[in-house]
Amino acid sequence: MKHISLRLRLFLYIMLPLMFISIILAYWRLYEAKQTTQEIFDRSLLAAALAISRDVVISQGDALSSNTHNLISEAAGGKIFYHVMGLGGVYLSGYAYPPIVVDRNLQHTNLPQYYEGRYRSEAVRIFKMSEIASFEDLTGNTVITVWQRLDDRNDFFALQAWRSAMLVFTILFSLATIVWFGVAQGLKPLFNLQSAIQVRSPDDLRTIKRHVPKEIQGIVQTLNHLLLKVSQSIQLQQEFISNAAHQLLNPAAAVLSMAQSARHGQNIEKKNKRLDELVSASKAMVHVCQQLLSLEKIRSMPKKNDISFDLIALIKDIATESGAYILKNNINFSLNAHDKALFVKADPFHIGEAIKNLIDNCMKHAGDKLSKITIDIIEQKEHIEFKISDDGIGLDSKLSDVAFKRFSQIGVSEGSGLGLSIAKAAIELYDGKIIINPSEEGASLSFFLHKAI
Image: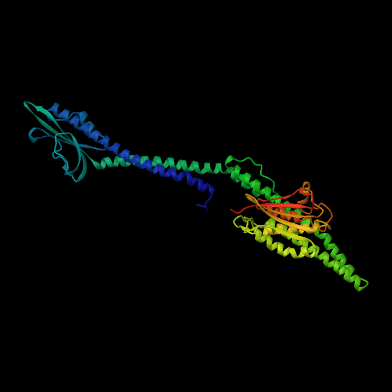
């Protein structure tokens, strides 16, 4: 079913139940037609028997009237045969011998009754009745037997069944034709929508404004939402490439300039100085490249909601890795955390990148008076708070929009302006929140993650 066309699928969904219902109705109609045919033909036998009985009494068993002859010859379903037996079993009129009874369970009674039999090797339907009649001075029972070939009845029933079948087939064929072309007309707006999308160029990501039936409005809205997200993603990627090229241009130009200066240095001392500057500039450019790759990796990697990890263990590993560099710069570094594990539902790579960039942000933007960095882990009812504070130049919480924007810096520093935007992208990927805390001394930032249940 999944490989057939939508038109054929809808056609089958409509027609198959109709065909099933039609088969049931046709079966019921044939059963009713058979019962009705039996009843009509039995009444014909009854009418013939009554007419023969009347004529026998009137004519004293000698002859039948012309009306009765016409009734017998023109009865529905074929010719009617009859046999009349008078008082004492004397043959009076009709065919000399009645049919042979084949129903062994037939009860011998004077009451009118229908049963099956055979007449001249043919199956027949028989009606037999007995009436009291008077002939001259004698009174007694007159037995009238009438019968009809079952083949005649069956032919009549087959004709009616064939007509009913043709009627049902004609109705089904008409419905199938109407449904087939009706479905095509109903799907026409969908095909028109497909044609409108097909003629668009890859650069045309405008929303679709075509009027469509309400049944496919949800599809169009979803597609428009996707087009908007793709357009935004492409725009962000283009901005990212433009900003990355701009950020890398200055370090690359500085590296080139220092390399040329070192090459043309007048003495060893100046050459070594230029080489040291060249190494520093190269490190700065490598750091920018690493941050750019980290930001792009966070943006492009799929979100993983099905894993959880111990945030305390991750922070301790990062603190051990970064602590040596921090302490080497004569900066006090402390971690205040629980001894027990605190699990969050997120990817440790993304959260690790956020923590590393927050620590790096303190080192690069806190200024010369930076003397301590403190990390606090605070367990709340539904969240875990990671708080990092320093005693540097400080960061106003009113400048959040600027601080978290890519390639944006509050003041002059050696940073690239990517650290906080990387942290924000990583935390918000897991429905977390990152804020700048009001602080009387230095800067303080916190991010919040949901606990793993």
